[in-house]
Every structure is written in C-alpha cells, then in structure tokens.
Length: 94
Image (cartoon, rainbow, N blue to C red; front, side, top):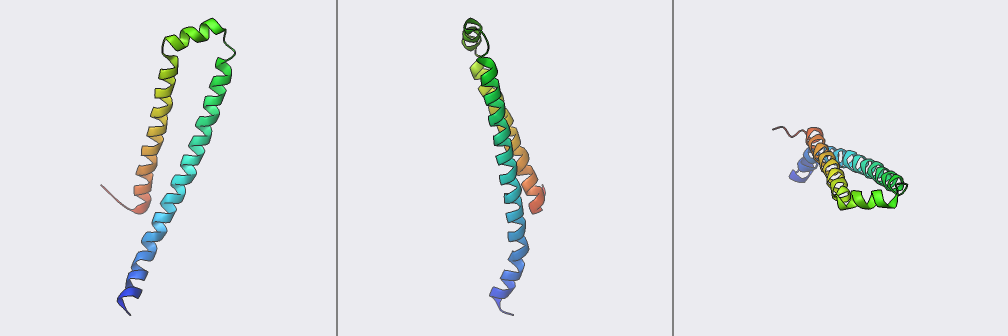
C-alpha cells in the first residue's frame, strides 16, 4: 500500500464529516434566513398599518435601530450555535 492510498483512506472519513457539517450549516442558515425575512416583512406590513404620526414617533425614538440590533443579535446567536454544532459533528472537543 502506497502513501497516497493510505492518506486517501485516512482522509475519507474526515472529508465526509466536513461535508456533513457544511450541509447542516447551509440548511440551518438558509432556513433561519427565510424565517427572519418573513418576520421582517410581517413586521413592516404591520407597522405600515399604524397611523403616520405614531410610526414617525416610534422611528424618532429609535425603534428602527432597536429592531436592527435585535435581528442582528438573533442572527449572530444562530450563527454561533451552528458553529458549535459543526464542531460537535466534526468531533472537535474543547
């Protein structure tokens, strides 16, 4: 058995684990992106039903910035959770 064959046999399980972890990551991130997009569009459509003066007052008070921070925090938390799960799948321990 040559060194190339041996390396190929040793790397196959590692490559399979990496591809599985990437697959789960992509599916999770696409799902979360779709859900957050629907949530944002739903919130915007509901906000447009408010009277103009109330909406302007909310935006002056920083409602838009607060919502941006909240959506960013949720997205960051999901990304961190996905990284932790990917390392578990790959077998990396702390």
